[in-house]
Image (cartoon, rainbow, N blue to C red; front, side, top):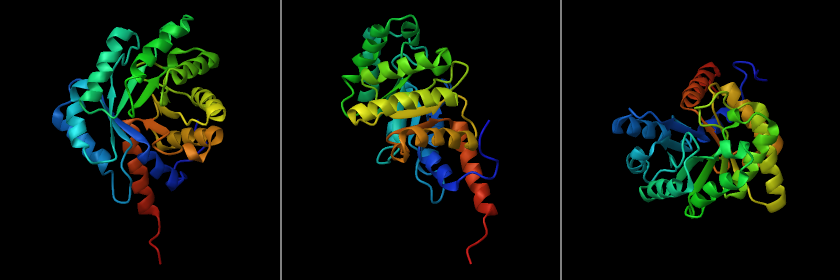
Length: 266
């Protein structure tokens, strides 16, 4: 349950939430026009609002999204190299990611082999991510650990650690294909590992929460978790993301309602 009452959400947090959201269209039936329309929404969500952080698409739409987002701050995010199952081996993961980058991807979303990790094979999970990261150069790699499939906090922390050691620029909670999605407990566990890594190395690994976050009050709760464990400095698109097109729409609606209810300045 959220700590916030409806209509009592901090407006500044909602504005930041828009700027830190990755909008996704991962439906195989999506047309090129659908992708272009989503990119336009991401670039211009409304008057006075900064653009969304990224647009997440399947590999066959990377060129369309990259062209539509050209010269904008919105990143082209491609879900590939083991998405959403996470069992693709090294031999296939690396070429898929390299192709997406060649076609214009700014970021790659890939899934940690959580089954291997859960079975005690951390080395396999590590190697499959490391094989992608070494070709990423200045591009961002987001590693999805699928928190809903990991039964304990200890496994969630272990998966986060393995992803970071393999070179993840972001650790992401969920694909949306496994229930349950992210919980606040899972998010806190991820943040605690990131905080420890930051304290030890000075490197700011980003966190992305997705999987069942549909309302602005839930988004603000997750933002509060980030602030409480990592600090305000992490609350930017460079180190924090939310993943939900439904959340994006709901947050825009909340901001519009807030603007209507606010008295005009004297």
